[in-house]
Amino acid sequence: MNSTATIFARLTGDATLVAMLATHNAAPAIFSDRAPDDYIVGPKPCLVIAAPSDDRPVETFTETSRLITQDVRGYDTDTGSSLELDAAMRRVRTLFHNDPGSLTVTGGTVKISTVTGPVQSPTTDPALIGRRVTLRLEIEEA
Amino acid sequence: MTELTYAKTGGPPHDWQGLKVFDLDTGQEVLKVVEVNTAEGWLISYRLNDKGMVYSDPENPEYAATQRIEGRYEIRRPS
Picture 1 (tube, rainbow over the protein chains, first blue to last red):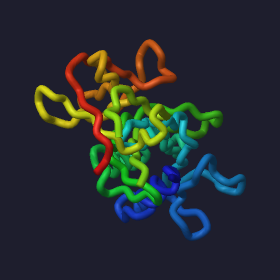
Picture 2: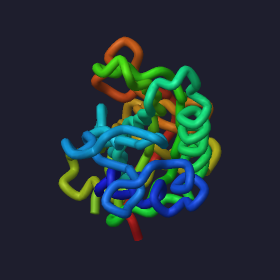
Picture 3: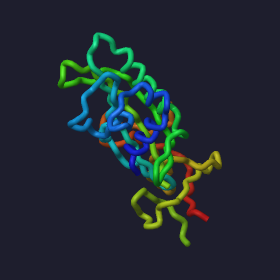
Picture 4: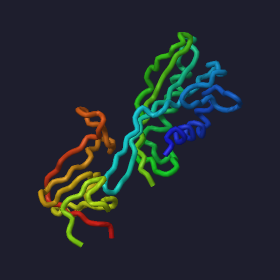
């Protein structure tokens, strides 16, 4: 079960969020793991779906599920205002928090989806600002 | 087939997947069970938070939080 693909599909499928983001190669600037080397942040935010920070089995006699923790980080240029980035990250939160029915995953069903954040996410480049939300997904295997 | 008195996820028994555990006092199926001993009258199940999610044991973050509940139980194989 590919939680990154599930998250990517949800993010790219939301027109409201896509309108808030920059583009890269004619697609929304939503990347997995990290932005490509040729991508320059700005003038709108971009998103990075991090690799899961936790992925553990939850197995009972009648269910086989996985409990996955995965961050979505957002970045924008530091212009003195984080309004656009914060708005985009709050939209990400809305797309996932307590809305498991809107998520599709091959080989399973998302039973629970909760989000914490957005909170600050550190950046190595002082010209950028960062935020992150943490998704917790419980996915029952088919 | 002899009555099962003990089961655990991963086995024994070898056909543990699909077993159901019922509370004989309420008649209700007990969910999220990972181990049960009907002869000794206890089971172990995952604890759930207020969102209904399994969560990490604060004392052992590598593992999900579980609880031991004593009672009268019955293990049933899927029909």
